[in-house]
Length: 209
Image (cartoon, rainbow, N blue to C red; front, side):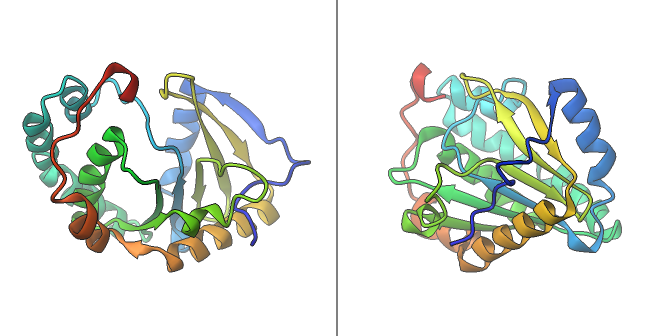
């Protein structure tokens, strides 16, 4: 099974956090007809500064969900602007069971984004592990046909920067592999209804956020 990862002989160009964010922002709105494709594999991240995540990390689940819902207007406008710019956002979210506290929170946020226009599908268990013959999948973002990033996080799970790849062969191959994963995934709305909506509030500990 082809893995969505850059060639071993193509190390890319490492970018620190500020340079990565600047570079990403420069290319995001130029994604074009090929669109934006994201692969998320890790089961827990830290997102300091995101109000709903902050509430979740303090154990204030109802407040966290209310803050997510409060972003609906923002995401309606955001995805309207994306559509007017001529591209779409596609995401593959790998989910291990049991669902981690962080991922329970993130799936609520992704569910809102899906309602507003993001095209997200979920792969579980063997659905994504069959792509991991050579190791755990990377966190990848492909912007159109011009640039791809491996997104990097520190040991605590905070965004730390990225590795940029420009080789069109790598970009095309990885985009195709993520598309294949996306086609085989379950629509987020169905997975959310079946596995997430009825979960009790997560028991959050410092190690789990």
